[in-house]
Image (cartoon, rainbow, N blue to C red; front, side):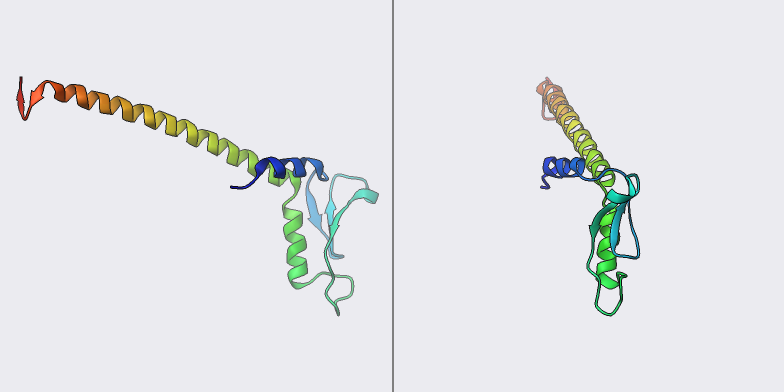
Length: 116
């Protein structure tokens, strides 16, 4: 099970807003001043100058896509689904109990197929 509390705390403390990835290997926050825009930098592969290629580019794109708002939104959806699942389980258990009681009461008056 994922530690959602820790992940929520980390996401809330990170640079807010949407993130993007530029060709200079930087993950940037869109809604912050220019001097604070850089969220992270990924390594540059040798022979490619200042631009990210291959796995480094893919990592940068992934980091940018997993911005705090995205992570918090996913966690909120998971928590809502977990709450809904628990409510459905409780409802199912109540319905099962009702049906078991109904079947027991319905069969109390019968011996085999004949009413008593």
